[in-house]
Image (tube, rainbow, N blue to C red; front, side, top):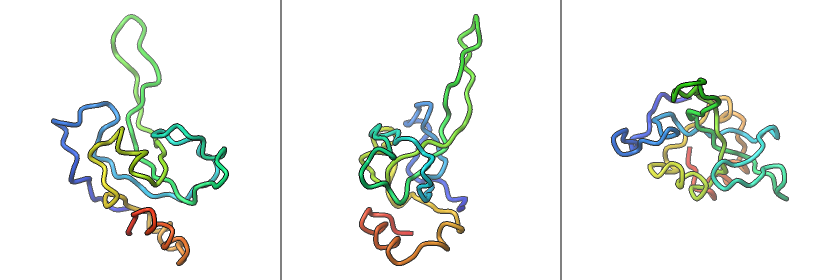
Amino acid sequence: MSDQQCQHYDSKVHRRMHHNNNPFVLRKYDGRIKKCRGCKVVFKGTTARPKFVISHQELCVYDRIKGSKRLLTTQRDIFYHCDPDCIQPRHPYFHMCDIVTNPAVTRHLNQNHIEHLHSLGVFL
């Protein structure tokens, strides 16, 4: 995976908990991912399952310490369709050119996969 950081992210402007400079990573859909965080559509419930999804490590709250305002948080992968309309409402700084991929995924792409990704605006 590339160490490239998103060039459009500005910590002074994008201050929500899930905003960060972690890369948006193209991943092959493996059937275990439940739903898109952007549009809330269940991946498995759709008639045509996506071939690829985009993951992004985001800070998530999982509990609150009793008697205080302190939150317990952790970084975890959040998944989106390969569609800017699903990602940009939560990440206004996102551009399709910001997507990176793991070399193992890149090696297993065939011509049909590449054409499908190009139709979605993803050029690796």
